[in-house]
Image (cartoon, rainbow, N blue to C red; front, side):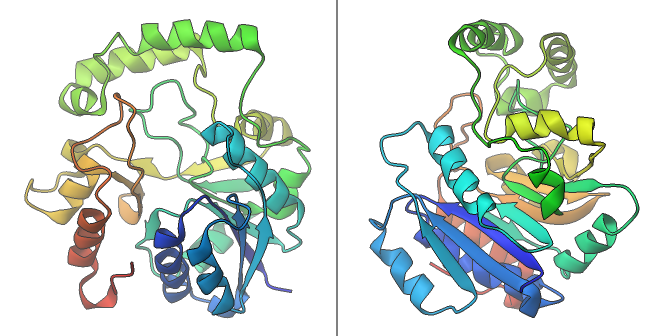
Length: 300
């Protein structure tokens, strides 16, 4: 049995998967310990995925029909199905549009997990995604002992009942200060960041997303977080013409103790998070290539 299962939910994400799988294997210290489990949320409609599955014996797949469902609901259903089938000691849940910079990422995180206390490691929602969880890893990148999360016995389904949804919707408008708390505005103003952070503390989680019930349960099981830091472009302390600054400006970039760990493309049409080139895959890959040099092979 492989020691680490990497769980990926794909909805027409083939353009990312080949790159991601190669990236995780090449940056791994123990690539033979990795097993990939892809949940195809198109239920077989993504024809390009079949080619990826055919050419890699370390990939297993499950079919799931996430069509016509709200995005987070579809994602949660895929994660529930995949996680139920994981038997390995460790699990990495990761989004397809992630690139890991850290060499020997698996050994680094395994060493942390094998300390006495229970731990979950990964990328929380960035501070500019107001109303979401910032102090525990999200399903963008979440590495943990499999049994730690299985014992919570919760679904990845994200949404509360209708009354709570209505209340959250009202509160989100307040803490987002109308149209003021966009990523660009928060990047420029420390005062605005502090105000929004204060409002978030008062209201709590008003934009629960995939895995939120599990995240809320983790403190009850004494599972502590080790979170990456998503930095605004101005907080990277990099020059404006450097790749790291540009990645942070247009996409998401994460550090652990000031060491570069990963980037998440996440092109979004949500006003608050949208950036000018956030949906430009070629631009994202170009910036990664500039940082990685010859070790990066551009994959389409």
